[in-house]
Image 1 (tube, rainbow, N blue to C red):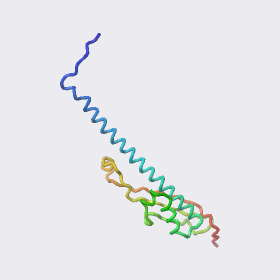
Image 2 (image 1 turned 90 degrees about the vertical axis):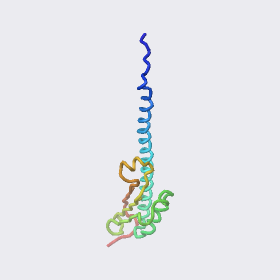
Image 3 (image 1 turned 45 degrees about the horizontal axis):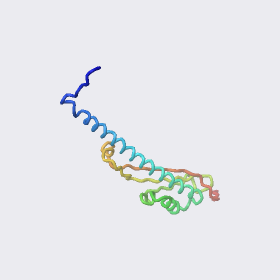
Length: 143
């Protein structure tokens, strides 16, 4: 039976040092996953809000103020983070049946909560944007 080796004095803190380095890396990864999840959730909320605006715009393509209000009122997240200037409504062609409408919603300064990630990408905020196109269904017939 082999003898049990006892660690020398120089090796006693090695496990603790390895654990500390490994834990820092794991915490940074976890924080990145959390911030990435927040950004993805925000993008999906913006996409859904843009879809609501495009749906309303497909029925009332000339009501730009109504489209923007529909986008803002679509969820609490959008209500708190987006203003009228962050919403773009663009007609693709004339406001006629069969043409298109595009609604774009942007949050220009989505805050990243993890300082390490901000240092890695060079800024503590990013822009998140979602755009949805839809077909105008209203009975406006253009000559």
